Amino acid sequence: MAKKKDSLVDVESMGIEVTIDTDRFDDLELIDMMDDVQEGDPLKVGKILKKILGKDWKRVYDGLRDESGVVPASKAMQFFGEVMEAAGAKNS
Image (cartoon, rainbow, N blue to C red; front, side, top):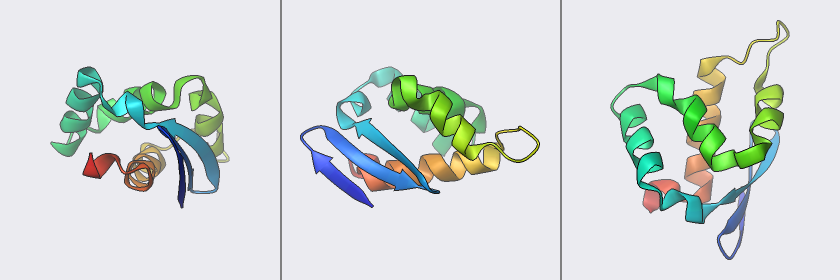
C-alpha cells in the first residue's frame, strides 16, 4: 500500500512502514546497483536499501531481523521488491 506526497511515498511492506523519496531513483549509481540485482547479484540489496532508506535503514533491518539476530537476505530481497513495486520504482 503506497500513499504519495510529491516525491515522498509512504510504503508498508512486511509490517514495516517507511517513507521513500522517489527522487532518489534518479541516481545512476542506484540504477546500476538495481540492474546488478536484476541480473542476479543479491549482494547489492543491502547497499540499495541503505541508499533509498537513508537513516531509516537500521530500523528496517531490525524489523527484518529474525529471532537469532540475523537479517535474512531472503527477507531483505522480499522487502526490497515489495517496496520498489509499491513506490512505483519498477515503472520509473
